[in-house]
Image 1 (cartoon, rainbow, N blue to C red):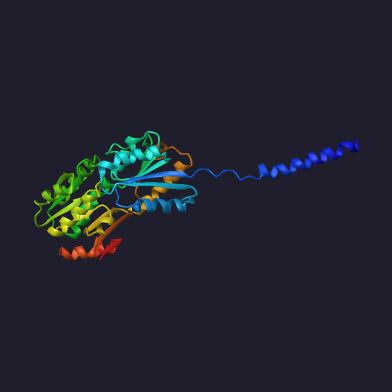
Image 2 (image 1 turned 30 degrees about the vertical axis):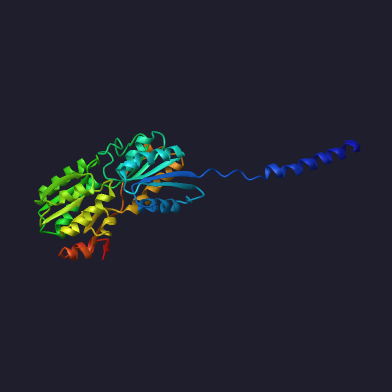
Length: 327
């Protein structure tokens, strides 16, 4: 090539080289974090299922702030505000809604047919009409069932062991929870075998509960079905202590507040378990292709101080099996 062409070509090459770092060296824009909306009736953002979800995602390598963000809506026990809170999450453009309890899950399901929903603390998702079947949930919903129907007979059995003098059990549930019907049937079947009288009663608020428990007498007990109203659980504990009758719950959370005994899934553990489902959906798996799972960690808890107040001696076989105590 003639020498007169070399210098221009040399400068063209240098100019091109100098321009490359300005474009090729630019970092690619980081992907937007996956936005998880949270909906429950808790009194604070740090509900145990939410903390379990965060811990479970972290264990899977999904970092809060980098890979996911959270938009947490809790209604402080006000179930009538649940639909508006669910709608607000959809409007905010979350990528997934994580719920606890039946009321929150139903509100989320009513609010959207497209945003994936992963639930926890739903006692009987089929009975509540949240999913079609456990193996093939269909629609945009899947989650972790708290197995309330399956565990209600065992709660009666443990109650009878802990308080053998009990003859009648008031089965208290939140009146609008649709999933309670199969649980009540199981409880009635089990009670017949144990020679117990079970009295199912649906209530809507604490004042109605107090009127109902006015009929409670000596040698009665109260079994609180896991439901959507935390206010009822607190009211049951207060009334049971005032009336000196045993109160049985589905989770150790309420034993910590003074309930006598619980047998059921751990809230934090359900959140950890649900994290696997959330991570799969984040990677593109459809909720309808993820079967509903049963809670994996079941705990027995006894409040020894409450047992003492009620004049009950906790049998050794209960002490040996219990996972948690509240003194």
